[in-house]
Image 1 (tube, rainbow, N blue to C red):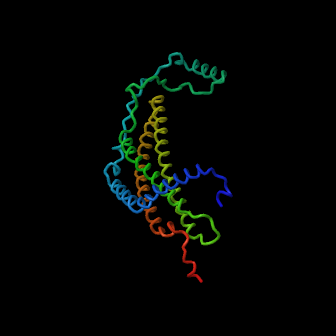
Image 2 (cartoon, rainbow, N blue to C red):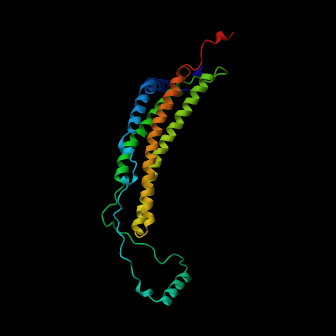
Length: 260
């Protein structure tokens, strides 16, 4: 029937079927992921949340020194006279330049070499990122396992199928949230780099320096929340799938005769 409705080359059909069978066998490991790997990971992450590295109460300990000294003030001898200063400003406005006279320090090279990242946060991020990647990969495997268990579309007796679809939707949501954590880490580095560049250009502005310490503290708190969320997601998925494992594996019961 299939071949009459859909023309598929027999050789390709055989290869594809063989590949799908191989892939399905691998996906059977997904049940073990839910039953054993997920509880193991939630215990590991729960232990990680008790680690002193992620429980620093005095956030000053995670601050990173910004070794950019404030340069000596630049004197502008040609503007010492008030009248001349006014004339210079007037000429600038007439020329169409509405910007301030002070444009910041030109930065050709950092005095102390490369400006280092916050080492405390880099160490913590490098420990958290593999955990995020692991959750994404395992969620993807379990999601494909459940999707391949969904039977063909039929009229009626679809309660089990709706449970499968809800499970897939939950796994997809968790996968997306975990991916957003990686985006958050990238945004932290970009934001911090822009602020450090501002400090190099305007070393005399204290607020830029304070903002760097503020975003470092914010990122530290965010990383702890991320680890907590990863643990909670393992708990939620393990609980949800085990509670509905019968309907997930056998969405359409064969005992419909009992209804009559």
